[in-house]
Amino acid sequence: MSDTQLYTLKENSTGQLHVFKSKKDDAGECFTETMSVCGKMRYNQTIKHHFACQTETFTRKKLAEIGRSVCGTCVSHLYGDYS
Ligand SMILES: [Zn+2]
Image (tube, rainbow, N blue to C red):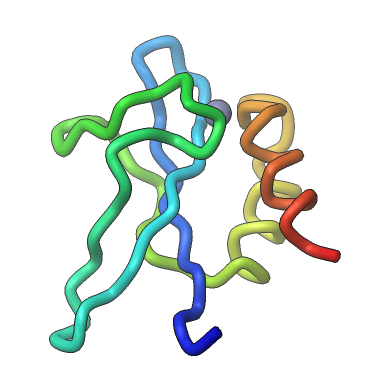
């Protein structure tokens, strides 16, 4: 696998945080998938984001810091990918 999977963290209208898979193009611009990894939140440009296009290591550290307001399904997805 040559592509490093990157992640973006977004906040929905109820204040819950969801993780989106992201990629950077050759110019370094961040592109984010339409649906969160849990499938519960649709990407919205206008909504508050906490970070964009970060590595899995960074994302897991941040999610641990943020704690309870992060979607549990998104968290387990991140840890499930790591084996
Ligand atoms: Zn989620």
